[in-house]
Image: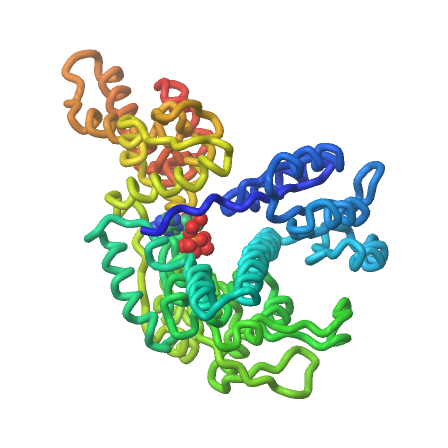
Amino acid sequence: MSPAQPLPVVLVVDDEVRSQDALRRTLDEDFVVLTASGAEQARVHLERQEVSVILCDQRMPGLTGVAFLKEVRERWPDTVRIVISGYTDSEDIIAGINDAGIYQYILKPWIPQHLLGTVRNAAEARTLQRDMNRLDLELRTSTPVLRQRAERKLDRARATFDFDRIERLAGSPMDAVCALAERIARVDLSVLVQGESGTGKELLARAMHYASPRAAGAFVVENCAALTDTLLESELFGHKRGAFTGAFEDHVGLFQRAHGGTIFLDEIGETSPAFQLRLLRVLQEGEVRPVGATRVVPVDVRVIAATHRDLEQRVRDGLFREDLYYRIACVTFTVPPLRERSGDIGPIARRLLAEIAPALGRGAVRLGDDAMAALLAYPWPGNIRELRNEISRAVALSEGEEMGAAAFSSRVLRGQAGRSVQTQAHAQALPSSGTLAERLDAVEAMLLRETLLRHHWNKTRAALELGLSRVGLRGKMKRFGLED
Ligand SMILES: Nc1ncnc2c1ncn2[C@@H]1O[C@H](COP(=O)(O)OP(=O)(O)OP(=O)(O)O)[C@@H](O)[C@H]1O
């Protein structure tokens, strides 16, 4: 398996704690997020560590975002600069955009998926730029042998996301999926990846791209559920200046950017029938027409689509076009949920620890036996994304080289207790003494506890199954001491 890469660091500069929190929540999973409430605090962070991307609010007391980013450009030129602003600030920003060398500006209110995509692209751009600068230097000063070495390094930079990045136990259900995906990667067919949220569909798609003959081309990602039809079309197919209000410049769509490479269309099952028809035409004709353009542009792109839905069922329900389904689903993979491949939990958790601990300034951290047991006992409804969040939280809260179960959230620990309590609950015989009312109470308490455990203490779902209102269920939980 390839060595773990530390997560890139993103610095959020905003004087409003609520905005800081919202940005942190959006970015937490892919980055180490630092926050600062103003320029002074931000400088301290920038002096102490390497920051990949800085996201700065335009309106801050004392200094505008653009003015501060100008300073960042001079002192920390490697950090990619993004400014976030309200619509009314656009003119100031445009005036200062060149001075501050701003990578992109994001208008409020921002859409989480969109913002995450922009920051991911910014971080990737920085890594590539650094690789390119280094390689460029080597190429310019090199002999043929050195040049070959540099080219090999470039290949390695592109292959960061190979199949080894997908941690799994040899022989696990995910291992079988990866083996097949690696073979199919080399054949230029469209692929549909199905699976619950957070199971690693995007990671699999990336690995397929880098294992394909298209590896030298771009891998671009769009989350189809995050945008309205109009925005989605403009993002994917591009637009001409003046095509609609706010289209101040020509915009190259993601299909064009992915020319020669792969486009990953996440949450394809959420698209509208009108959009599905437009996408079908693009795929059939191999060309896009940017919104407002008269000419079409030929594109050569492999599509890998993903969904958490049963897309065939959606076709049967008339919610997804059958012709589009067959276009995008030449090959279909289903990524199993983590609870169906508990053998993978250990390798994945160790990989995540190796990535997250150094990014948070910690040395090597290993999982204690009780911590491992807790991870194995929990059913992970949010899959690997939830596991990543749990490990980040535990690293931040714990100390020392060995992480114990106590570092985990009560939800995970309850999941662990859940199994043992559940077994006890099943092993428990019906009460053999007491009045009828007391015995009925004991049975009721057992049933409640067992149902809550099965639903991971989700009261809404447990109440639904038991035919109770949520308030009614809470009342009973209180009565039987089942309060969480
Ligand atoms: N096998 C694995 N080994 C290590 N990390 C993994 C693995 N699978 C997934 N991850 C990590 O888990 C997180 C979620 O993965 P990913 O975004 O690929 O899931 P997804 O199924 O595409 O989610 P969604 O449907 O919600 O977009 C990412 O941070 C990813 O790097």
